[in-house]
Length: 201
Image 1 (cartoon, rainbow, N blue to C red):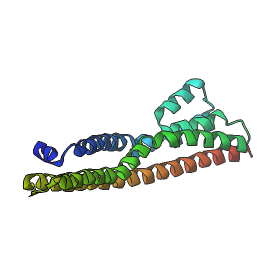
Image 2: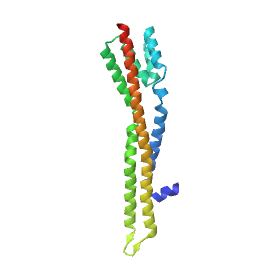
Image 3: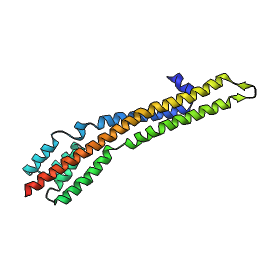
Image 4: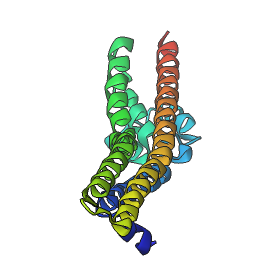
């Protein structure tokens, strides 16, 4: 592997750094964006039970916010149970936008790497081509220099594409996952609002 990096020239090290960053972000997001962690299965029923028992305390709200992103949204709803429906919905939307921002963390960086990696590979290709033309002289071409220039060009192109493809797949996957989580949270929050306001009638 080290021999390949040496043969590919200095542009490959930029791609190596990009690949390490992309891998770290993918692992971090895989660990964080788990349905059980974002949308705990029994949390909604527990919040409804707390509301019906009338045991809404600052300590309960703090524990709920620390529980999960869904907990943050439902805590905002609980905090405004005595407010009109519109006020309650506004507080849920504000909490939801903050949670969505947290869920989308690092996705912009991963998307940038997916877009930038082929361009970095292309940059390495251009450097290789410059080396090829630089090896030409009046007496002809230097075969070793020519071979090195070609290897720089091809290795960089291949490595750039090898980074971009999985990075793009995971970026799209995480985006879809975040969107589905946000929709689920909104639906559960609206369901809670309906339970609160149907109980008042």
